[in-house]
Image: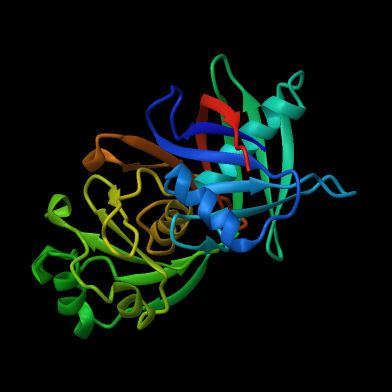
Length: 282
């Protein structure tokens, strides 16, 4: 089966967030899809199946640990690959993906050396605002002190498909890391799947797998909730393009651009560059 290695949130290869885009020739067992993702060793891999009669592409997304019901940079990267392979003569195309029971729409625009891909994540769901009595536990779990939390901003779980615990820090973002062995179970107390910490002054953001062993470079599924959060709490305005910074601490600095429309839909956009292609021989 053919695969493509692209870099998302970057106009040039070997920067931004790496992604493998795979085209299975036939349905494969879940365990085989997971094993392929583990072998390719990207933070996420996306599997694209042939478009159905409505022109919609079914996809599945895996990390090296599990399948995800939503993710941001895999959808953007997959959009660029489909544009290049199937619509090479079109400057811009609209593509719809089917991820589980959800349809996700993207627009891809061909640029000189890359593709600009924009995704509509829909409306954000504000799941739970965390009581301050938990702030000390949250700070300790993230290797910071409670006074590092910016209490002008709430700690809150927000989702556009994947629920993130948004943790605002006024200092020591550089020191943050996951310390708890049971971090995923800890996050479930707040109805979150992952954490996204951000510096309230610079909007430098960080997230990891729940073991704390791998830091993500640029996370579209977290950027959407954060953009919605900044609008909800009147820090930013609707239709204002928000620049989120991520990847600095793993030497892959990236900029994720997002905004919230007047109707409340969350949009995330980023450039996609092509690095490599090949064949998986199984």
